Structures are given as structure tokens and as C-alpha cells.
Length: 482
Image (cartoon, rainbow, N blue to C red; front, side, top):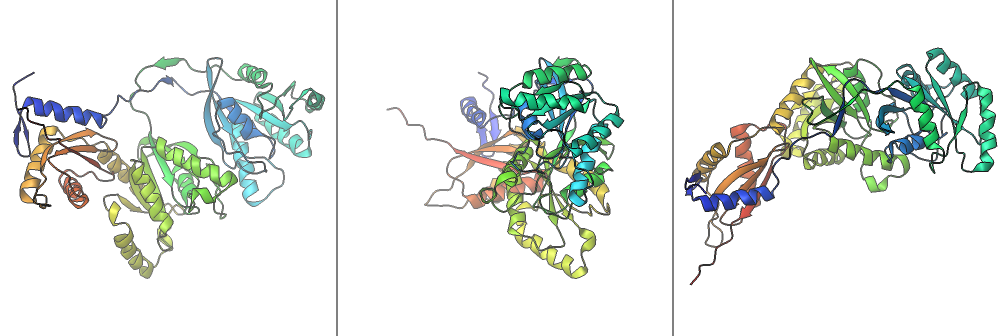
């Protein structure tokens, strides 16, 4: 070991002490290498899963991708948007697009859902048409077949809910649809799904080759979160420049997280529209319960959370709880105050007071005032996201950090407690995304002093838009050998 010394806030540390401190820091978890397992070159082939409501499309999607990802409930109309998943069969990869139930001559929300299903057909390479074999072909099925034929895409017919040999005769009746062989399947139990996927692979074009190793770059992942009906889907549609997701005055329209690659500010971003987070997840049921769980999962996969707040209404406890959830998840944070165009001067005055009182713990988060309806100030969204990501990935050298800690301790030492004054001996940054710091001290540091250290770190180094984690390791006294 080298005999060189290392300078901490209170002078030089010998190599043995430094090694001890770094070993403790390693226990806190330095950043692992950011490796991706498999990535393809070029776009994957796309399979659209379509059918009328409640024929089991989402159950079939879950069966194909091998996990319960799509929200499923035993009633029609649960899926509303086009939701994309990646799947693999016999070594071939493809994208699976789950769509809402298509119905003929519907209005309002149902019409918007049907329109999204038609867009899914147009944007696909092949169509998996799902029919309930127990019910047989209906007028709605016949009308949807006409739309599929106009699109000119290869079609694989799935006769779902064939749970035993007795139902195979019902599946055989679907030859009359003129779409070729009806593949008898039980999406719930997995019966016949292998033969169905073999037929799907024959209909889809070949996938691009696979590559292994580290993937450089890639779209940054942005999760849009907030309570129901604050305008998350409207915001996604505005930045996408099209009606990518269903928007309705009915609160809770979005059920599944919807990913969309969007060109904004000269860059490609992956925006994730999520279901509105309700007051208490355990008080919800059915589709809303699973939608809340999917939102939490989408937040974990994102890099930055854009939290939408309805500025035209008083800040609710629900808003502050959602912000706390994003901070605790360790994501970078941007707070977007939507519906800004609906506020008058009086409401703006009270909103500023509410922010000062209720959001004091996230004063470091960039704030943008937008209108998802009119597009007002949308150009400010990307700079705010980039600022938050830059803070999220900021790293400070050990030498610079300890020089800063030395100045901080000299100007504002820890209060004396019980006749003792704890000292910060050494500090190191254990990781980024979010920034994590380990302080080695001679005694316990009070919460108020930790907050003071965090505030001074932000003043000195920025860290805009990111939570900061500070942990303290108290150095154990060595027993002297007699």
C-alpha cells in the first residue's frame, strides 16, 4: 500500500484509514456498469392484436409475453390505448401491440378507443384477429374484418376461449370468416398458444439480427405521472403531434402505461403516459388497482418523472404524495403546472403561496407552466428535463468534495450534544442517478445538520432536479491493545 496521505475535512488521513473509509463506501453501492443484454439493429416487426371487447386480447398478450403486464379484468372496455410490448418466440423477436376493443357505430370514449385500434392495424406488419369461439362470429367481427382487409395486412385468426375438446367444433365454425384456419387457443390456460405463435411467425417479416454488449446512448425515458384527469394524455398527444392516446373528460381513462418515441427539441425521447395515481392504491379494485401498480413500475423504469399538477385547482394532498413517491424512487423530477391558461391573477397568487407552503421540500425541482390543450410553453419542457437529468448524473471528485466539507465544517460545525461534538472525518460520492454521498463521522449527525449539508451541497454544486441521498457512517472506536 502507498504511504501517501489523503486530505479530509480535518486534515490528513493515513492510508489505512482511507482504505477503511473506501471499503465502507463500497458497501453503500457504487454505480454498476450500465449494461444492456440484447438490442436489435433496426425496427422489430409489429403484430397488432385486435378484436371486439372482452374476447381476451389482453389475456392473450400476457400469455405471449410471459408475464402479467397488460391490465385484465372480466368486463369489456378495460384496454383503451395502443400499448406496445416486446416478445420472443423461438429466438425471433417482435413487437406486440395490444389494442382496445373495436366496436361499430359507437360514440365518445368508445369511438376514440376504436380509432386507436384502427391506427394499430395501419401501423402493423401483421394482424392477430381474436374472436370468442364460444360466441362465434358477430356483426361487429364481420365489420372489423372489412377494415383489416382494406389495410391489406397478413391476418392470423385466433379462436380464443377454447378450453377443451368440446369447444373445438365452435372454433371450426370460424372458417366461414374467410381468414384461413382458425387457431383454437385458450389464452387463460395456454392451450394451443404455441401453434398460434408458429403461424404468427410465418406471417411476420424477419426480425433484425441481435447484438450483444454495451449499448451507447438511446432515448431518455420520461414518465408522465400525476393524479387522474390532470392532462397527462393530452400532454403526450401535444408533444407527439397526434392523438396517440385516448383523451376523455372521464377521470382514469388511461389504464396501461403507453410508451411513445417522440422527437422534441432536436432529440428523441421515450415518453411514458401512465394511469392517474389515486388516493390509496389499496382502496382501488380491479383494473384501477392494476393500473396503479403499472404506474409505479413505469416510474421505476424511467429516468425522469414529469409530475403534472392541475394549476387551476388547489394543491391536494394527493399531489404532494405523488411528488414524494417520485422523489423516493430516486428519479430526476420536473414539476409541470398544467392548465395554466385557465388561471386568473387571483388563482396565480394563491398557487404561489401553496407552492411555498406545501412544496418546500422540492424547491430544487425545475418548474414549467404549460397548457397541454393549447401547447403554451411546451418549448420549455425539454430544457427543464435536460437540466434535471444533468443534475441527476452530476459527480463530484473526492478531493473537491472534501475541500467543500472542510469549509462547511469550519464555518458551521455540528452543535455540541452531551458534551461531544461530532465531526465529519471524510466524505465520498458513492454513486449517481441519483447522487449518493457517504459521510464518515466521529459521531451521530442529527437530521437537521444533514439537511444543512444537503442544502449547502445544492448551493455549491447545483444538483437541480434531483433528489440527493446522504448516509452517515459512524467510525467505530478501535480498542487499544494493552
